Length: 358
Image (cartoon, rainbow, N blue to C red; front, top):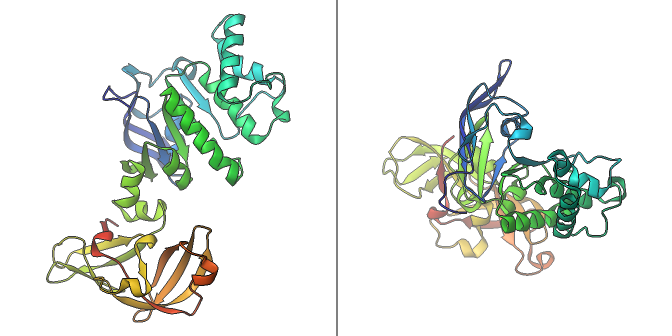
């Protein structure tokens, strides 16, 4: 990425479907060569935003620019975009080579150019030698590579990815995340990705735009959004978080919540209503919690083994409030994991809690 002007800019974009405000005054700037993910639940407006960038939907108001060009009212085929859909949308009765060459043929490229570019793309997506087979003869991952090659062969100004890995199983999806990201970085192609998968957004993006209700609630690097969520929605949608609502005590240093008195990471206005967020991996369990400013006691009511870590639900003795905590697998969890009914102390450093808006 560079300090050059944005490769893709959305300014005050609005879109309604009847009484539904699908996208509400949305602003977004994507730097050249960056991959930005639109992340959010179904109905948040992310797919509608992508379709407006692609030209399949027209905004009611606002402006879409690619580079310095206003493309708001341009037809899709005049925007210089490449697009990969979740369903891949390959032509079933055309070979792999014919699928990849389709955009070049529509642009009037010579047969020699088509052949050379198809060969180059097949090599790039590791499908050399499969140019004469049909999509039905390929695995899901191979079909996805063909769709990606077809989008990239026309040298698009911006690449649009609409849930491109949603049809793949978990192992293949994770593998393709690395492949797409490596290719995107190598080509330095500006990319807008739509996904509802938090891990996918975290692993592939330079920036994540968390959306809800047609708006971007927070935009930033994956680690920034995860470590410093600004709202309760972002804290719980991007990962898991324990939320504690309450009022700031008279000294401005403690939050009086249903879980008890919890130290704030920074002084706040006495009497004001606040919400604290604490990530499960920041909760310290057992003897290691001794001496921490948050000192609570509880009982394990549920546990889940997740490979590299175990997740626990702990009911606090004093209030019954439930807290989620993670313990990393630094030893065999079967030997050292907590069992349902185990009693323990827990806590966390005050600086590991984050003040978020409701």
